[in-house]
Image (cartoon, rainbow, N blue to C red; front, side, top):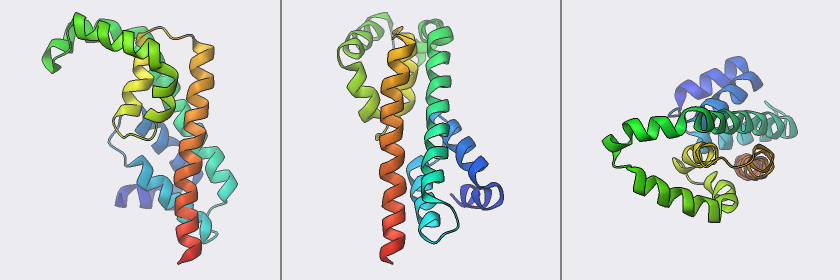
Length: 161
């Protein structure tokens, strides 16, 4: 977290965008903690609250879209080739795809709030060949709500302290 704090301090909104994009793709970045910190910085007027939400949304959405594209282009072959090493076989992949096709929209929106799951949901959207337009809409809704919630928590904690 110290790295993220220094990086944001030095590079501002560019750092927020980049770190969130990488975090949603799957890099080990504490996204929720970082966004809460961004909200706090907005509460003490270091950053602008509205701009922070827009930039955070852009980073999260970009990361989700990249993860979707990776899943769509390379996901199935990678899972079929290396899935056995993590306990994923063709039968399990089929079950996950069936479940995902049934609950996919909600799992994408709610998945943003569960660390580790948001990365998989974006990727599985691509693997299951969810239509790009639908993915963009649903992922955009989830990413926006996620960013607003965590930045607002940090903002209001900062205002109250």
